[in-house]
Every structure is written in C-alpha cells, then in structure tokens.
Image (cartoon, rainbow, N blue to C red; front, side, top):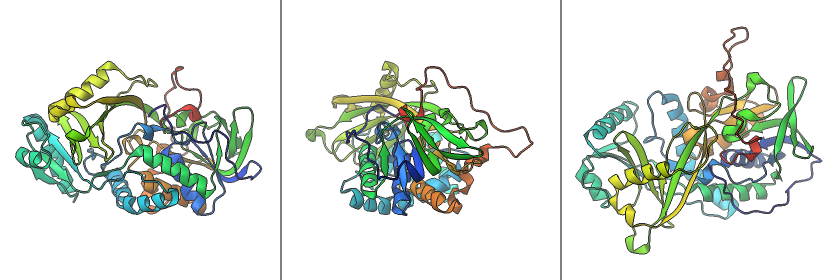
Length: 421
C-alpha cells in the first residue's frame, strides 16, 4: 500500500536457467515473495518478476494478526483460513528468521477492542456473542478493566473485548526478511515490469517483460495485488475480479519518557467507525486505517489523516503528545467476497494468489504453503479449496460468469508497477 520499498541490489538476480523456469511469480509484494520462497524450498526452479520487489501493500499495513477481532458477519468460511494461518505464525516466524537472519517484529501481545460510547458498546456486545457462537476465545471486560490493562485509555471507554490470541508482526521487517530468504533459497529475481502474460494455444507459458524479454515457465502465478486484473494477455474468463480499496495510515513515535504507551494492539469503534493503534517494540505507533473506494487514488488526504487522529484521540487522548513521523496511503486488493483467490485457474499453467484484502499479512504463512502445494502437486490443500479462483467462474453455458469492471485510465499501466500487493 505504498511507494516505499527496502533498498536492495538493483541488478537482476538470476540463477541461469536461460529464461526457462518451473514456475514464475508476477508481483514482488509479500504474497509473491512467500509463494516464491516456499516453492523454492520444495525444489521448484522459480523466478519472480517485479521492478521493485519487497514493496507492496505490506509496506503500509499495520500488521495486525486479527483473526478474531477482524471477524465480519458472513465471513465464517474465511475465518477458518484466517485461524489456520494464525496458528502457523509462531513456527513460520521462527523458520523465516533463521532463514533470513533477521527479526520480523512478531509480538504475541494480544488485542484489546474497546467501545467509545453506548452504541459502540452494543455493537461490541453483538460481536462478542457472534464470536462465542463460533467457539472463539474472547473475554468481555468493563471499562474499568480495560483501563487497568491500558492506563492510557480515555475515561469514557465503555467496555471492550480482550482477545489473547490476536497478535501482531511488523510487515516491513517481514517483507525484508522474505526478500532475503528468497535470495538465499535461489529465487531468480527479474527486476523489470511485466508487460503481458504469454499464452500458447490453451495454456499460459510465461511472460513478456519491458524491452521484449520473455521468460518461459511451466506455471505462472499472478500475485500482483489490486492490479492483478489488469495484466494484458489474461483471458477474460479467468481474469481475477479484484479492485483497489484505499487505506490511509499514520505513524507516530513514542519517546522513551512515555513508554510503555500501549502494551498491546488497541482496536476501537468510535461512533460506528473503526480505528486501531498498533504499538511496535521499536517505539513506533501505527494508527489506521481508512477504507475508501476511490479507484487508483493513493494520495494522503488531510481529511483521512484528521479522521484517524480524531478517532484515535477519543480512545487514547495522549497521542496528541507524540511526534508524527509518517503518513502513507495505498491500495488493498479487494475481492467480491473479501477472500483471497488461491491456486489454479481454468487456464492451464496460470495460478492466482491475490484478493487478500484486509488479511494479507495474517494469511502470509498459509498462502505460502497453499501455493507451494499447488505448484508442486497441482492440487489445493483441503483448507484452501473454498478459495479457488474458479468460484467466480460460472459453469459452462450458464452465461453467468462474473465480469470485471473497466479499469480507469488513471490506473498504473501494469501489475508490476503497483506497490500494493
């Protein structure tokens, strides 16, 4: 969700397969990187094409691993995938940190969701009932109990939910570690824009890069975030129905004299609107995030920043004393049912890993495992089968296949330019 990316060697890193690979990933955000890393670990000769790998939506995201507190009505199937990925996080982090030699900022700190007024309290009560009905672990607390856990909370907090199992990770560190792990695992990086998917007959056979360079692959994974639906050469009947959903985020710094400011992630409903505050161990406090259907606009607006700071201030008044260090905005890859598209499409040789919307960071571990399995066996693990891209393709002859809205002319010209994977 930003235009920032970690600095790495500008020269393409390739492993000498004469432009032919077992698999090729389009998009170097967190989803593309974890797919490439996990596949390389299984012995797949894999390449990744992106002009600036290591950027993407993760560079803006707060990194909440909020399977329970992020639950929305009607998303029970997605909940199962989210919970499965959350359970994998500790082992995933340990393996990635060993492979990369880098700390990814994983914190098993839990989450506190609080209500600002009586209406917000009623909303949280309903959510708590819904969570309990699904067998999820969350504990209702009074306002006083919430302030005992987090003394910086406003006196007017009307109660909340404590979810001990919803943790956090630093997405920027996570992405940088995945980039290093990919390089060490032998992933071939082509730091160039993907211009089109190559299709020979009825099969995807690779891509064409800027300058006319062609890369051949037995299987191609489209993991280009909200721009996944724009790639030239993808047949309309398998084109992923993803859209950009803008999110704005504010980053503050907590001086040592105020530490510890918050000891866990605090989510809130303020007059019906969501806001979250995520404290990092390095003293950063992330406040987010807006959710705006504004096409391809990624400007930081005064109104968006104001709304975030206003609502966060209602819950934690002390934020006004903290230095403002960064504002940023970017695009989440939304899908029609808010769930990812994972695995093979109806076009042989083409797979998708996109549409993660709010849950890209949370779903990173399971996405890597699912896509590696799909690339090596051609099949999806049972937990991922509800998320096949083919769920958006109508049976032959029904005439009910979904359509993808036309992309505004202001959109970036190719998936590899988009920094919101």
